[in-house]
Structures are given as C-alpha cells and as structure tokens.
Length: 227
Image (cartoon, rainbow, N blue to C red; front, top):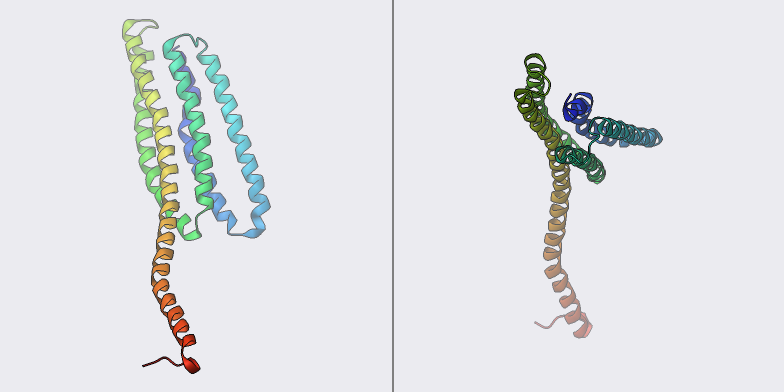
C-alpha cells in the first residue's frame, strides 16, 4: 500500500485533533488558575500533558519511519519534512498560546475562549470535509483499481495531496490561533500604554501650573502674589 496513505490512516485522527487538545489544555489551565488551591494539581496536569504530547510525537515518528522508509524518494522526503514541520509548529504554538493566556486577565481569557470556539467550528468543518473526501477516494481506489495500475497511482497521488493539505491546515490553524491570542494581549497593552500617555499628558500641564505657582509664591513677600 502507498506508504503516505498508510501513515495517515494510522495517525491522521491524532494529527487533526492535536491542535484542539492543545487549545483545550491551555484554556482549562486558565480556569484552574482561578483557584489557588489547585496550583499543584495544575502543575501535575501540565507535566502529564507534556509527557502525553511527547509520547504521541515518538509514536508518530515511529509510524512515519516504518511507513516512509525510503527517504531518498523525493515525494517521501517532502512528506517527512511536512510532518516534522507540523510537530515543530505544534510545539512552538503551544508555548506561545500558553504564554499569551498567562498574561491575560480573566475577562480577556473569556474573549480568547469565545474566539477559540468560533475558529474551532470552522476548522472542524474544513478538516472533516477534507478527511471524508480523502477516505472516500481511498475506498474507491482499493475497490476498483489494482495495485500498481496507472489509474490507482493517479488516484493515490490525489489522496496524498489532500492529506498534505490536511496537515497544512493544522499548521495554519495553530499559527492563526497563536497570533490571535498574541494580538489580544498586544491590544490590551496598547490600550494601557495609551491610557497612561493620556494621563501623563493631562497631568503634566497641571503639575507645571502648580510648580509655577509655588515658585512665584515663594518669591513674593509673605508668600502673596503681586496683583
């Protein structure tokens, strides 16, 4: 069987779901932080989650090496690079999302949760349709065409392209979520910075007038201003 398709049949579900699991984990951690008594449990959950992700990564790499053994083949090499890029993206975006949520107020975290719900709905629909289409093609190929036939090879190439697209959708989704959360934090920081600048701009003339009055008063007899 086609090695890329073999790999995806085993790991495809986890590949699609992992971005959602990462988001759910970090948002659940935000809720847990509201209760100081759960800090130790939160640390334990974080360590367990990281260990789970690492175990999934090792399993994925094992299946990848088993299925796509000929790294010299250009097509296989590019697919392996795509999977490695996926793994790196998940790790980097998980770190970024965790840091952004950690800098948010509880109110802002609720906005992040609402944003996630909206984006996840669209992501699930896109990935479900892509996966369903690829699986339908795969079933048709295995039923209708002989192994190694021109028609089967052509259909399998189309399936490979869809599977590549599904992985790329995962990367794009996670990068967008990390960027959206970062912008939420940046917007609040900009608003706070602008508010401070406005306050300083308002207070500076008032402080100057008070200081000037004090200087003039100190130079007059008995501290009275000349009329």
